[in-house]
Length: 178
Length: 255
Image 1 (cartoon, rainbow over the protein chains, first blue to last red):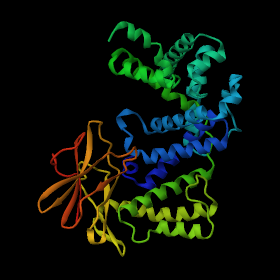
Image 2: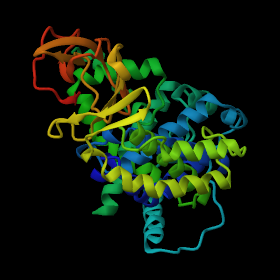
Image 3: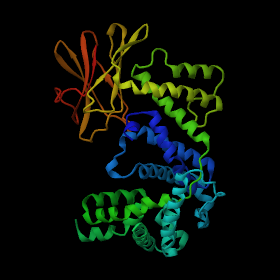
Image 4: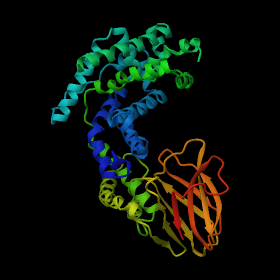
């Protein structure tokens, strides 16, 4: 990362090789469209390159930083365009988008799939009403008031479920690691 | 901080971490967060759960064109930085390629999705750009851009600005002011500012104040007639500027 911060394009290329797939996958999961996901990923990684001096190792891993930026870009895209419009009437738009499983070509890909299963399993342990609001917010880009409207429940209930769900998820992840 | 204010915000923690608050609510919560240790602890406690969420996504391979167009943009950035710093000799390799492509009706350089030809040209240039970037910070010379001006690369105090670089275009005859361009400079706190100075016969004269953007790039006016000026320098000063430099220059251009 030091080389990336020094402006070394080759080091940045390696960073993309390592995290590009995760970034693209997250964008695709959120917007459900490969072309839009590609645009979001490009914008996000360019932003990472151009704001590379902002990364601080003591505040988290490179992967967390990269995925955070991709997530922000995808949220911006969702909120400024009409992607939401076709999904607003129902929450089904944020259901997991599966492509045909790709052949696991490398150990890294296998590890990523295992990691995904691990987190999904922890998510699966949450009560439905908690995982629902978390997924609508994080992957769907909906605000708490939009979620309250969609699920026909008070805003306070939505906020409470978000907090409780995250707490339970945190504990679930800890148990699985332990 | 009152208990009431904390109670008003404590249920916002989850929504805040999930980016589900409105802009106004987010600003209010962040203001509250600055002064509420309980909420700070709660945010720190729950953040790992949010950080884990993107890892729940099964990997989908991006199209190869994404990497190609991304690295082409990066190559362009590197070339422009090199050219601004005077590393590339006139005219720059990337500029030449750009003109060539424009001349044959190639894709516009501003597009995110280049044509195959554009990508190919850019990737070829990337090889040169990468090797050029490695030597960027070691260069300190003057290059003649054209018949009427020359570019002088700044010397940077790498102990204080490890990623900084800068250059000054000096017009021929030095009868007019010019612009100092900088790259990779750290953003300063809101109570500080970069200040540009010109030195003539031992006298140091303030020129302008500037901030850098998110990417560390910035430009500042040098208003002094450069005749007999032997150096243009940059220091970090309190907001509003100083009457005299308060520190040794972090960046200087020797003329």
